[in-house]
Structure formats: structure tokens, C-alpha cells
Length: 92
Image (cartoon, helix red, strand yellow):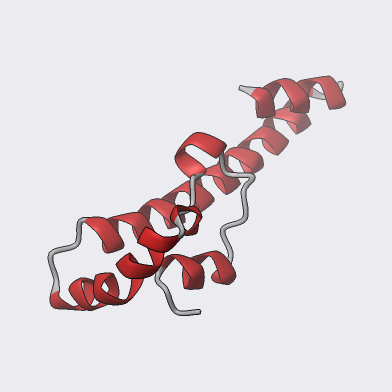
């Protein structure tokens, strides 16, 4: 709702504000979807490939829980780039 409020407050043309809000919501969804996909792969995927990822990632996560991105609580404005993915999967 913050994104809608901000768009409406920053633009007196409500159609333009609605378009801005839609773009921001799309970005929020894309970031959240990407990070949830990473978390699903690491914690829930039953495949052998995911098991191999867990073998590498989990010892590092146990040493530093901050490796796990917190976009579900912290929101989609947190970084969700390749560096975050590499850190989560213990590829650094």
C-alpha cells in the first residue's frame, strides 16, 4: 500500500500514478518471486541437484544465518542480485 500512497501523493494525474504503482508492484513481485524460488530450491526441492546445493550451502549458513535473504519480512527493497544468490548458495 505504501507504493500506491506514494504514487498518488507524487502525481496529481491519477492514471499516471496508477501506472507507476503497477510498475512498482511488478518489481516487488519479481524480486519476491526470485528470492522465494531460491529459498524453495535450497530448503524444499527434493532433487539431487538441490541436495548438492544444500551440502555446500548449509554449513556456511549455520556459521552465518545472515546468508539467508529476508525479503519476506524485510521487503522487496532489499538487494536480490547475483551477489545475494551466490552468498545464499555458498558459492563465495
